Image (cartoon, rainbow, N blue to C red; front, side, top):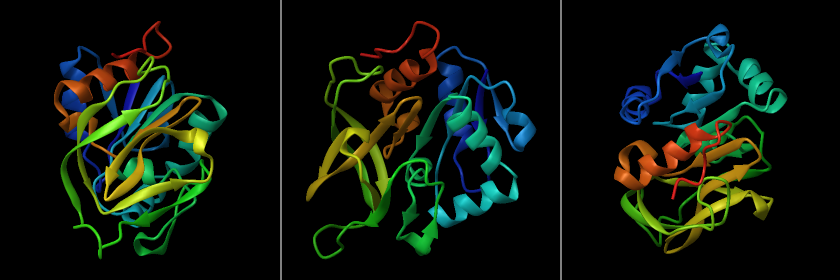
Length: 206
């Protein structure tokens, strides 16, 4: 059962459309009870880390998500801000985040690059369950901040914006991308297809 977190700072409808396009069924999750029975949880993100955390608190989802993802090992996918809040702290509005992964979120150096980064960027992937041996491709980004994991083994993909930055992470059942899978054409749909196939003999999107 696929659950897409629907909160006021998110982009749930676009992600739902992508999931349906791939031939899967999904439901929106708007409170803790909606998480029950999930096999895959997707947390889209549009907006700030602080606003996203505030919405999840208001909906009573923080504990339910932790129980499902950390305790129950349900497959989880965070997108854009949905990736950033997995870490301990974000410089954006000085926000404390979920802390499922060690590290913090920093702002791009505005003296070197234009923010937000907006458009297509090439991502280099490390080997994992979705990408097999790894494959470079272009994905769509809209971000002014980026994650800085403490543990380098959490980094699944990197891109360059003046200098290398973390574009995707993976630890066990937790996947996340700074780019928008749902807006990244066939490359994004391939990764999403691989994620939704996890646990069902799927994976290896490429």
